[in-house]
Length: 526
Image 1 (cartoon, rainbow, N blue to C red):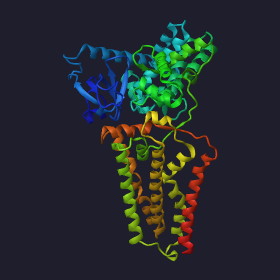
Image 2: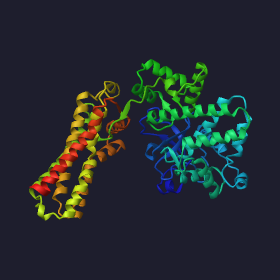
Image 3: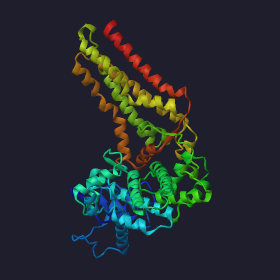
Image 4: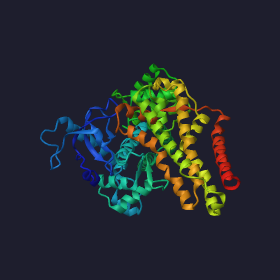
């Protein structure tokens, strides 16, 4: 257990816990043991006792402690055999990933760099010469296992701190050697290791260990499996909504309905064909296995898109705001009224500020505004337009996206009328906010005052975003949390209309021109 988790009073590693409050019903009430925490204590990795799901990452509030290990670090007299089996399986998983990333101190010092990637990896790669696809897939599986354990933050990359934390926990290497290993794997030298870079490092060591043979064909096979691994990554990034690292049938069906025209029967057949161990979940390894099988059956190269019948990515994420929460909600539901209440609250505050500006404040005479203040106002005009997120989002949606009946299959309340009404609410919010922002800017008589007035209303623009985050993080009700979470998942089809797609730029230009004309009138005409 790291210092951060201890200071937060979180359960110790090895504690027996129950998963609670998860959106995935298949994970709720599952029993497991705590494997580790992220360095900031914001995520806990739990090894489940049932099935072969491996590690899942959840928030500390999503676990209920059933039993903590004794002070000596043992599981306690009352620990179940199931827990011991889980701990043993986790140990094997870590051992396998560690085995593939076991760096030889002797060779590292001799070479003077991190070019010798691992003695144990060499031994493994040289033991099996016959089944090349399976060897490569095993290497990729090991790379993925190491990545999952090292990426404690769950952000999809391993930074130097995470790598050092992992290596010190699983090896005896010194800091210098760990840094050399990190820089060797970090191929693009951007300070973060991606899943692809870990895979490449493992495969490179495997080729070096095998030597000889048909290197060209081996490299071609590795490239093909790397490509399908990247496709699998893209699939999991879009479809793994609960972040468990595996896809259940519900997640797979939801993703396929958004990206294909397959029937439910075809989708379930595809899922079953990839779920090799029939545990109800698809892993990245099973996706690679399915790819190899279809490639062998077809006698030629097939991509994951060919395998799943995926269409081109013709969908776009919708704006993550409370107005799309209104769009996706059922009429009369708590989410429906919550979104309207937030809109009315924000609009009411804007109106109160506008009344105050035009009753208790006045626009200064042009002669009272010095040249530097006028220059500052002019330079802030395009910034004033650019920060209007609600307006820009509305223009983008109408210029690039369209409503589709397919949305109703996933969110029955997302009607076409509510689509337009939600965008109208967002537009009204944005235009009113632009109006009072510009008013404050033009009423300024000092440079600092111009900046302060311009920034003063920043909190107001964030009210709807704060409300959405509160709902999504579960601080309100479960129904609000569910709909707020749906906003992250929902996509709209692109319209592919070249004429319409320039309209958002045109509308932004019109807004800037309108504020410019207003400024000219106030500073030089009226």
